[in-house]
Amino acid sequence: MRQLNMKVLFFGVYNINDTVNNRTRILLKGLKNLGVEVEECNAPVASWKRFWHLANQYRKTNKDYDIMFLAHGGAQLVAPLARILTRKKIVADPIVSLYDTMVHDRKKCRRMSIRGFYYYFIDWLMIKLVDIVILDTEENIKYFSNNFHAKRSKFKRLFIGSENTPCPIREMATARDFVVHFHGYFIPLHGIEYIVRAAKILENEHVIFRIMGKGQTYRHTKKLAEELRVKNVNFIDPVPRSDIQKYLCDSDVVLGIFGNTDKALRVIPNKAYDALAAGKALITADTPAIKELLEDRNNCLLCRIADPGDLAAKVLELKNNQNLLKKISNAGRELFEKKLDQKILSLGLKKIIEETLSYA
Image: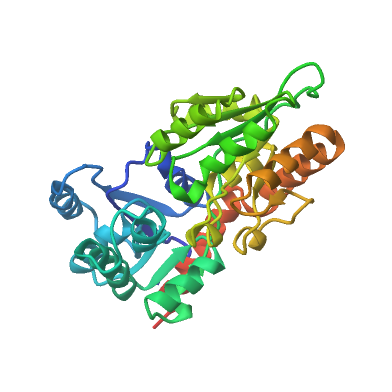
């Protein structure tokens, strides 16, 4: 085992420049900044040929690495190939369950269907094949351990983080509309329909809701907004990850997730980390997972899950209480600097890798 000159091979089908791969970029850059030697072996190809390309890429890779890291964005899919190619230790970073996401949250197929079994199997197989699995919350670890019959010691928690930076101080919303921002996929987990219903309640309160994204529930949500004749919601197409910063800075409050799926109880969404990094007040659903990191009325404001009335009340409270808005914004940024910045998360990953290498 080499700890002083440790070398890590990042392996997978991820696209390092993709919007969803901020997690991988943070850890990759962070490890390099810590002096860890990192090499990449990835094949960001959309078809089944990606596995052929990945295997071919691996053949050209130096095999003097100490440990293989299966990066977020296909960790479950590449785990069998990874184990075929190497006998060295493997750490996987799936963050969440594909089975849970596709079957229970997005309801793309039934639990007892062939596709449902497939998603369960590749989650289960990944756990069996690798040495350590990294997840984002203790609630997710409980889910994996219980549903895939794996020992708790197989899992480690590592928060996700964000690449966003602090925003300049924004003038008080006295002579302008109060801007509430959401960005992300339109999926059941996010509960965007509850955001639209909350906006309707605040239609005459000089509050503008800006909802950015596309996805599974987009048409349904747009139709709901039309049926309610909501006038204070602006739907915006997705933008590159690098452009999200300016939208965060041009807002007063950032929204998290509000869906009433089981998965919503177990995850902390990327947009929550983005809000904390930017120093923006966060409103999100009150869940066991969110309480692993955040404290209500200190560094966030929590509302009842799937409750547009409570969400509207919390938005209005921050609009009318600038002191609370400022307190939550500042405390959120302080928390980010203390627990979630690139160096801290990378040190956490480095520790996990060193511990994994030390196992017999």
